[in-house]
Amino acid sequence: MNEEVRMIAWVRGRVQGVGFRWFTRAKALEIGGLVGFALNLDDGRVQVVAEGTRSGCEGLLDWLRHGDTPGRVDGVTEIWGTPRGIYETFAIR
Image 1 (cartoon, rainbow, N blue to C red):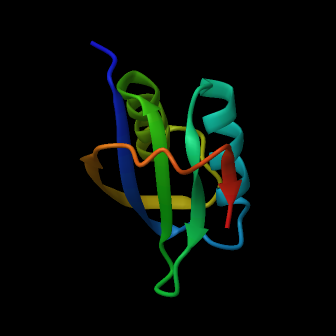
Image 2 (tube, rainbow, N blue to C red):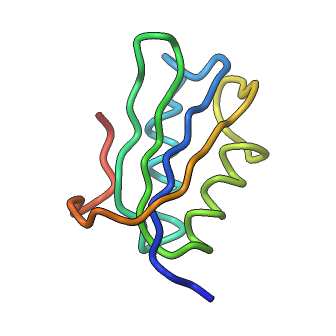
Image 3 (cartoon, helix red, strand yellow):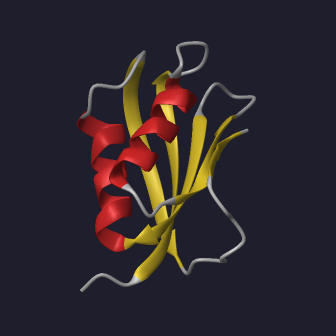
């Protein structure tokens, strides 16, 4: 089952100033069919919002947790919801 979903993930660790958002966007584009954004938060985390197929979002989440990311990921927390359909591409904010 591959319904359209919305995933919001908060990535903790040394994830700012290391190209993390750029690599996250590149991975989302590589997976294909994902739209959303990656954003640096004031507390040092990166927020990733992705909309697309469940398998695509799960692939991105798995990469955030276990992939060859820049910096150092200490943990990822995510929530799932219904897509809002307001994004045209995957952006860096």
